[in-house]
Image (cartoon, rainbow, N blue to C red; front, side):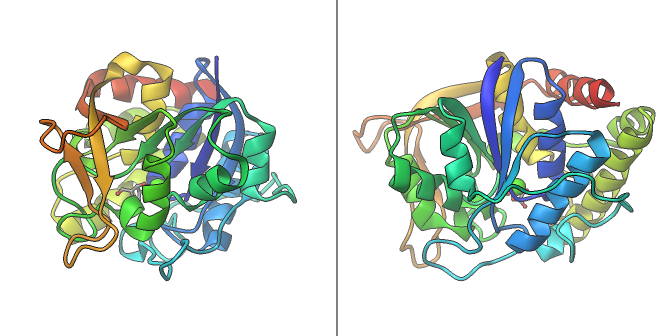
Length: 300
Ligand code: BDR
Ligand code: CA
């Protein structure tokens, strides 16, 4: 199995990403680290503890950065609610948080693949502190080859901390970028919610998460079903053939007038720069949801 440290900000879709990583035999989930983004660090860390307690996951959970490198924190309460993971009534928390900082926990588990499903603050801080050598690969949910979801051209995770994203994309570590252009294909239909609900208490918790997520995606974006962004990054590690990628140069807009936080993906090589990322362009939707349902049933 591939050793993985999952850096996240749960987050409805981050919670499913945790379950997918922990419930898949192809992944050796070494640690979960948290970063402020969807909600404050305290809230997203509590949410990581809640979902791990519900699923019986006992890997170390470590707190990371409380705010982006430069900008004030911008949370996604409109999408994820006041707690950052509104919807289900979770049972008691049975897993703790380790003392060490997220970046030190990442370091302790290298060499490994870093899967990042929140703002890239912790990952950038890790690279500054420890350098890129021990990171096998960074697979991140963020950006888009098309338009954004937080501003017209910026996706949320990159928008929250574009300076961190610029450090990560400039690091020389092999990077796979899973953007909105593919995650918007991973729509959680009512049929998938029904499948999850049939898997017992943990499945019903997933169903309740998705029902809340569906309501905010309908109200904010007018989507008929919510996109399960973050688990697509985990699926790419489980089975690379589920997500088709092309190599391209990706520039991060840190100073645009209207475009700050945009990922400028040079799909046609117009800038003449060396590619710095594998960029996701296709998703096998049925196999992706098959992996998610299998992982949840594995944990049940
Ligand atoms: C990303 O933003 C967050 O709200 C989700 O958890 C996902 O990581 C999608 O733009
Ligand atoms: Ca996330």
